[in-house]
Image (tube, rainbow, N blue to C red; front, side, top):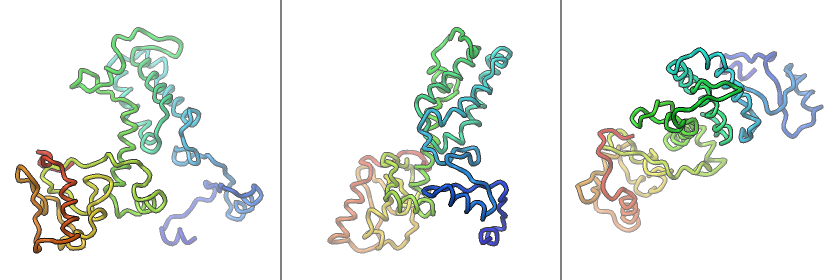
Length: 284
């Protein structure tokens, strides 16, 4: 009732179910009866995704494999041209599995099986027999620039979609979900993301202190003394740092720093690249 009053949305109890963790079936049954919804058990399907499973077993992905097989049916392989099959393969890849690939890391065996299905379909094979392959599938997956057909690897697509969350974790530092993850798993979120960094061009569209552009932590976290002295907390990189061709210049507005403040500023400059940023106009 409180949720409905605050959000203006009404829960459809007839379409809802109650799942229990660490309670007896009798207690779950009593609670579900009190609420007026059905009893449920984990794992379950929610918005097409499996909830309550780690999705690291082959059996958890069988529904995805079956849907792939239905899309790549035998009659389509017999009636479509190479161009038609190529279009179907790209459309299936770009629409159907993205939801799953954005949330879960697919097991290697599943990725291999899905690639086999795509490869067999492309060369006109069926579920019972294969046809001659005129080129290696790994070469066909490559981009047009590398003489491929720009289909793209499923494994690469899976990792790219998951990397989106790593990047959001680094950049959306004030978001509630980021704070929750950090409170549970630590400052790095337990994600092992220290290899991610920004490609800085002129430094005109990246905040110097609050954005994680040089590793998993922001400069305001790594250099709190200098950050407390900062008069413009939202300044950009280009407002404070410039490359003179041989070394870095820090555009400071105060008198020369001493003691621990000077030491922290030296540590900040020591973390910067030894040969300047990239030549791009914008940061990436």
